[in-house]
Length: 434
Image (cartoon, rainbow, N blue to C red; front, top):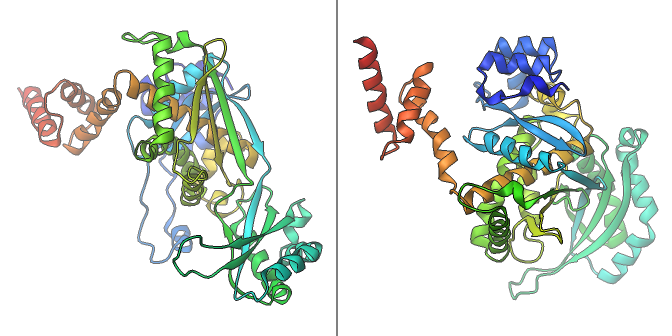
């Protein structure tokens, strides 16, 4: 990738941005032409086969975050999101972190978990022993249910048994849950795991004497964790009003608040997911599954807490770390046929699933750094409202150059609302007609 063509990317007009991506080697000539021709929309026939009662497409803006250095590789990251300032903040954070060496990542396993949950088990201890003794047979039967994944090197690899008990006086009975750990290779794997669970459920009923109530994967993918870390020298954090050391300490303190206060933690983690969801959505993955698993992971201690940690090392540098469960895929589903998803994977160099995880968790860490840094320095609204002004200008009816003209005046207005934007636009148009 030739990054010289991506300098000052945000200042280029729409067509020049696309041309720059082509010249930098990020997209092909065919992809460039498709973007210029505005042909990323789903056609009606495809849409009708994806969902029921299809009537049209609901578009999301697709942008790219710049400046990412992940495991010593420069990347342009596609993001699909409607919220202003997210991509700008992501690129800004990636630039600072990249100048300090970038993100270093690790991926632990890539296993999905399926559950066969049983009710009315007559003897829990005996049932648990029976399942443990039949482990290899259970795994073999699971793999027989989906042999194609086994041929690709994946399949059911392990199992464990959990007793589900309620420690309150709610009257909820106990259940037994058999967990199967499945390597789904490049797929997210929901269909693979669900097919396996349905295939082994009758045998597990025989082993336990219970009745299989549920046979499905869990989106709490604790065996599919990705971690990103960064180290930022304090002097790179300096602002007009704060020293680098002050900014560093305030970021650490703000994260401490999010660690002990769930009210703050929810908003803190929402900022992380601004970046995570945007990449997951752009890549054609299931952002709802990722959201559910991530927020469960944030509560694994028994209290909902910050997903990131920020600290300082002996040299006084700011050290950030984020771990997320990220069961994403690079094949299957809409990834294979949605034109925008296919483009997103091309922009990232057609990453394998483990690399896509590394990208997503790094974007989440960058997004958190940008948001918390803004919060503890100039405030979150300064940058956000500057971009929000453009949205108000568009809502007021501004077009072309008038959008930025209205936004520039609106940013310095006492009241930043739609009516004020309409009045500004009206004044500009009246001046233009004179």
